[in-house]
Amino acid sequence: MTKDVVIPGEFLAYEEEFLEGKNTINTNGKIYSTTLGKLEVDEKNRLINVKNARDIDKLKVGAVIIGKVSFAKDNVVSIKMVEAYSGKTKLILPSTSAFLKVSSVSTSYIESMKQYLKIGDIVKAVVSEIKPFGIQLRTNDPELGVVKAYCSKCRAPMHLSQDKLQCLSCGSVEIRKISTEYEVK
Ligand SMILES: [Zn+2]
Image (cartoon, rainbow, N blue to C red; front, side, top):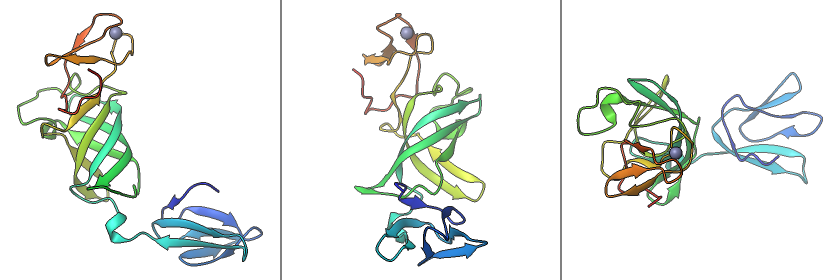
């Protein structure tokens, strides 16, 4: 059992393996978590506990996330979040999917975001809204946006020089909403 963050309703173990401990419930022989938190397995007493995530550790508006573009349309892209931080504190991700709308990409007007964020790109963004239907992000600050882009023709990482993204493998030049912290130079 290597997973350390669990969500409410997540299956943890069978009652033959463990007894239900803190913040867990036994339903028909299966033990589930009742909260968002960290999984703690007490091997000695065969107990399974979920330690409540402190509020300070939970994903919140204003947190900085690193994620990967998983789906792109003209007006919205879907981002799979990998890490989240508030200052230097690493935060717990209740789910990994988030959205970025065309209006939150840049301070300048963008008609279609397809060329500014492409599938597979690594993005630094800030959480702007957390709603039951989804987590919304924004990249409309200079340090936010794509930190690593992949060539849409040959998938090689693209290099940034003089505000231009160029693929050194095939020569393709592309546009992105580039972060000032772009990694490949
Ligand atoms: Zn290329």
